[in-house]
Length: 197
Image (cartoon, rainbow, N blue to C red):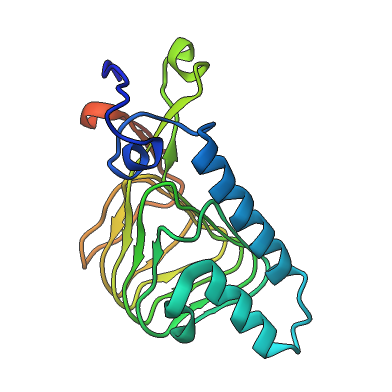
């Protein structure tokens, strides 16, 4: 995190480029407030009012809402940085911190209480206290099933036909599996700290 912040790019552009950015930027704050307002409306909408629910979700994630079903309650930072494939389903209490792009393939299923994080904070307290942070993309491939109470950390790629569980912080190919209860934190420059019982 030795990079010196510049003003050549907007904070939103820096965020989406994976660079250090200031989350207190006015444009970003306004975008998050918009997302919080819309998700509040969605989460408090009568479940029987399917038309209204669909209209609100369309405001959050755009035209792709037509082939996406997300149970309430749903939370996101922006909504505009999430890309869904066809036939997406999420159960209740789905949280996506989409400071970077989050991409889902086709036929993806999400269990209850799943969290997907792209946001990261500098490890060094001096830098962290300046309100600068960073974000790393998350990619979920076709036919992935993410089991209940799973946590997907920044920078992870999960490809096809996989059931994941617990805390996932490293990418995995199309075969094999994740070690349960393992965790890791990716640091800038590719370094990573890991722990597993």
